[in-house]
Length: 204
Ligand code: HEM
Image (cartoon, rainbow, N blue to C red):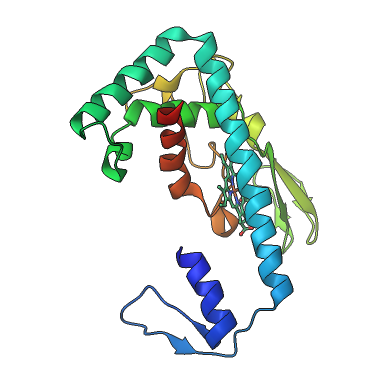
């Protein structure tokens, strides 16, 4: 809602809201047109709908193939529902630790955006090689390639949510798990998504 609030503020009062109490909202010349609002809404729909729905389809596919994992997730949901009088609360969703690992493992094995694209903003010499990436070159980073690399994920073809345990078998340096991209353009829905996807499990 913070995002929507910022857009409406820019539209109606040409100010930018801040979440920082030390930096009160300021009037600015910020403006947004009707077309830009429509474009933002379309982006939310395009980026948010199919990605979430298809991830859940892959999760359901893996659960159908592995009844033991399905049962484990079911027991976890039952336990948390019992704790919260059969109502799923925000806190309850946060307690679905195993369900979250199932979502992570689904995103690892089936990253909906298999390659992340960036444009090189200045010439970059790749360390340890004589390769220089020129400014303006489009660089494609293979999330799928990283996720299926046995150097980072043992037996990468096996669907194993436990690899996301603290003590799991994952050997994960930074930037080897990229279902949501990375850096300043990382998917804006990252945090909301983990809990909403857990919620979908409960409903199904
Ligand atoms: C399983 C679900 C999702 C996956 C796997 C996913 C994945 C991604 C990826 C890989 C990117 C590109 C990040 C980068 O270039 O570094 C992205 C960007 C984006 N996503 Fe998601 N996404 C999901 C759900 C959503 C949802 C639910 C929304 C909105 C409600 C959303 C909104 C966006 C937006 C607006 C961007 C563009 C951010 C920018 O360019 O600054 N995504 N997403």
